[in-house]
Amino acid sequence: MARDRATFLAHRKGLQKTKFYCQVCERQCLDENGFKCHIQSESHIRKLHSKLSSVGDNARKLVDEYSKKFLTDFLGQLHRMHGEKSIGANRFYQEYIQDKDHIHLNSTRWNSLTRLVMYLKDTGRCDVVINDEELEDSDTAKFSIAYRGSSDSIVKRKEREKKKIMSSDKESSEKLLKEQIQRGSSRTAGNSEEKEKESETKPVVAFKPIGKIKLKLGSSGVL
Image 1 (tube, rainbow, N blue to C red):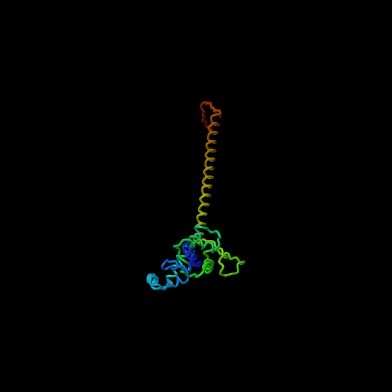
Image 2: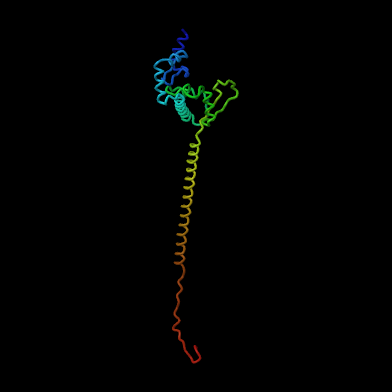
């Protein structure tokens, strides 16, 4: 009786284990027995065949599609909610699975959160810190993850910062040049005014005529 009540409450609160979720049918099963019964049902087999036919009856390709979608959603939410700050892997995973429409981990290529974290670390998608005090491999609480921007995004961010600095330097240079031009114009105008004042104050020297100059020519030349 108590077990039935616990199962009912788990179903009501959405606390079912994600490993009992069927991604193909998008259906949550209550326990292992319910999950086994579901995957043997005609409706599940029919939907599975339909999914496989859409990828050329290639089961690996179907798993790869789920894995790609899961990774995109997982990292996207990690970046949006926490930026590049570190957070416990298990804690964030619990945040991620709050959305009932998310791609479930059991339908991807990673059969555990530990394997997913190691993949994120090995591929450079996340910085992973391992707390060596936790000795149990199954205890995912020992992992902390932090989103790492791609090389392209880092380059673009640096380019934006560089352009911003260059724009600031350009504005400063233009401002300095304008100030120099204004100073030069002011000095030129001041010199012109001083010359005009000097010309106004200088006395005018008048030259008196000394008369006509006479030349006499003698037999020996000019006298």
